[in-house]
Amino acid sequence: MPDLKRPPLIIRGVTKRFSVGDDEIEALTRVDTTIEAGQFVCLIGASGCGKSTLLRIVAGFDEPTTGEVISQGKPITGPGSDRGMVFQDYALFPWMTVRDNIVFGPRQRRPPKAEIDDIAAEFLKLVGLERFADRYPSQLSGGMKQRVAIARVLANNASTLLMDEPFGALDALTREQLQHELQQIWSRTGVTVIFVTHSVEEAVLLADRVLVMSAGPGRIANDITIDLPRPRDVSSPEFNAVRRDVARRLTSHLAPRAIEPAAH
Amino acid sequence: MNEHVTALPEATQSAPEAPRRRSLWGEKLASIALGAGFPIVLVLLWHYAVAITGTRLIPSPRQVAVMMYDFSFGGIYDDAFSATILTHIWKSMTRVYGGFFLAAIVGIPLGLMIGRLKVLRQMLDPTINVLRPIPVTAWLPLSMIFFGLGPNAAIFLVFLGAFYPILLNTTFGVRSVDPRLFEAAAMLGCSGSAMFRQIVFPAALPSIFNGLRIAHGFAWILIVVGEMTGVPTGLGSVIMDGRTLSRTDLVVTGMIVIGAMGFVTDRIIVMISNRVLSWSPQHHA
Image 1 (cartoon, rainbow over the protein chains, first blue to last red):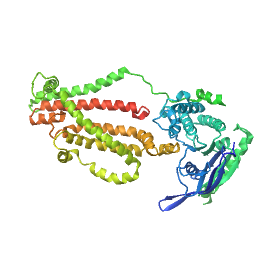
Image 2 (cartoon, rainbow over the protein chains, first blue to last red; image 1 turned 120 degrees about the vertical axis):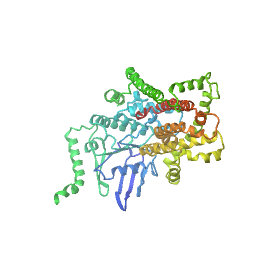
Image 3 (cartoon, each protein chain N blue to C red; image 1 turned 90 degrees about the horizontal axis):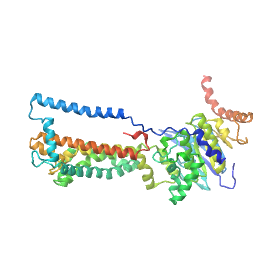
Image 4 (cartoon, rainbow over the protein chains, first blue to last red; image 1 turned 180 degrees about the vertical axis):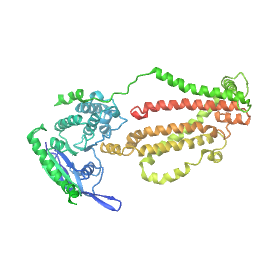
């Protein structure tokens, strides 16, 4: 649920070129969009459309070739605690327990121990991992690792959650469970979510707004608002109508490539 | 909503089970019997080989056992070596661990920095790779000039032998850390020297322990060379003395003590490493 009182995240004229040998590849070309605070946005598109690149630029891990990203009213210059990334392969610190992973960010500011304990308790509860606080990541299932990764970012007071195919490595049941939990966490905390996915269903289930990206060079081809009431029922006719619409727009960008071989 | 989130664990958290501590005593005993049985066979072979050939150049196991007893407790030969084992072990340990810890103190931080800083890598890598293949024994004459006759030359040689495995394994450990861990730490507000302390070092720790273990083995190997530099005490000097005096029983005794010390201390390192690396399931050696 967008909150117009907080500053939006603005992506302005972002272009990204990589040089591969002597060639230069344009991964993103002039991406312009504004994401309201508290909005849940899904980025969807075929492999190589630049959606992960865009997410990494917003995170501050990569620099755009031209253009800028404005978060909290300021242009970003690198990774910052206002934007937290949730990686597909979790990227938890394997030598830290679940609790220490979650409070890693807050601990950097050296607050009193009592405050650390409070934060740990709050976010362990948020993701339902109280009983696993002293486990190491290698002792957790994939779904639990991803809960830790989400809690780690939220415990650091991130206002924007960047998620790069976060549930891609999980089995269908766990994935459904985590989609459900993520929606609850999102509505409870009011964070902005930018969520990269391959799945049309996942995008329509979660998003307020779906940005369909197309490749060669990467750009935002469609900006679709999803008005379906929440909680959404994936088996309802309304849901399916929207899903078909998004899928159609997605495949229309793939069509030229798909037809090519038949033309010969 | 709150209840729902906290109610989730029961249904979904089928975490992999914590490693089970089932002590299979039978299997353990069999493994010990096998491990101890083989050297007994070797000693028997040694005994019969000496008895059949009638050689006087190689001592029999019995002669070595007597020498070992005298070296440990005295009362048999009552010469310069009787009941001196602890002195020699202690002296050798000061050199082994002097060199080893020096190598760790220099090698680990340098390895962390070389692994992380490209400029340093470009600057130092070629030099290190030229110096590394030079055998430690080749440094013997120079080290005696630098440090004179005495324990410092021995410590320097042990240091040289232990330094490269520690340095290379630390560098390798840092280089093979998932770059996402650095990104994750950076986005959570960690940077500069805190990054070294909190991320680079612990992430490289499994590799660092590999390096320490290899280096520790080298340190014991090099003690004989190190103590060729004219020190009067130490297990290496005992072996050199045995050679000069043609007392092969003494030589073999020294060899066995070094082997035993190396074995026991290696087990201690493995225990420490298993404890420190309990988070990493791959590193239970």
